[in-house]
Image (cartoon, rainbow, N blue to C red; front, side, top):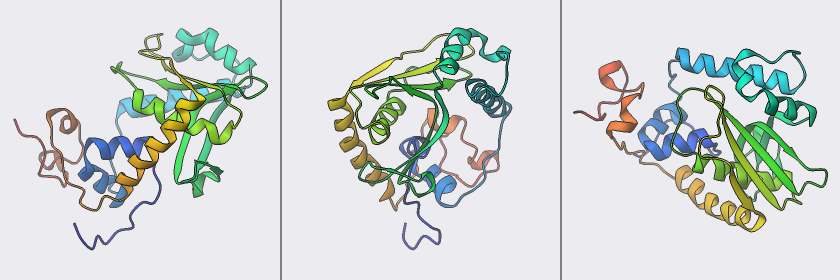
Length: 228
């Protein structure tokens, strides 16, 4: 695809990489052409519960909301430890901390905390809805992103809290400093490949197209969707 009359993104996030790796054409529609995607009751519910969690950890509400009660002890621990909630992280291509809006990589962690020396870092991501097989990609990006903000780190522990189910899925994922440094090199290559894409070819499959809002048969602009 040549002469795209849109501004090509120069930054990325886990969500944008997830879209691109699933289908570059969907990335074109959503992140380049900026087509609006419809919300859903599940998305609204997830956003609401995330806001409850943020407010509780920050001490803005007193009682534990009922949607968080399966992790009540853990949330109280985060609150007591003064964990960071929804902290905006911006990271440069050299993996240095920068302003969130100027970041090459941008992310907001649901919760993060460290020991007093900044050696042992814990990152928590809240999940609502169904349980997935793994979150290794998301975990790796989070782990790689901790070093700019915790330069003395020795270990990183990433957990995914399934708030509707009361368990951690396949997590925790644990990393050493050496592994985090290797992840930064690996994700630099992956991010540059995504940001350098100018073809945005559709990659239809039964799984990626099943819930895609851009399917032409559902009123969208993509007619390359998977057909049975």
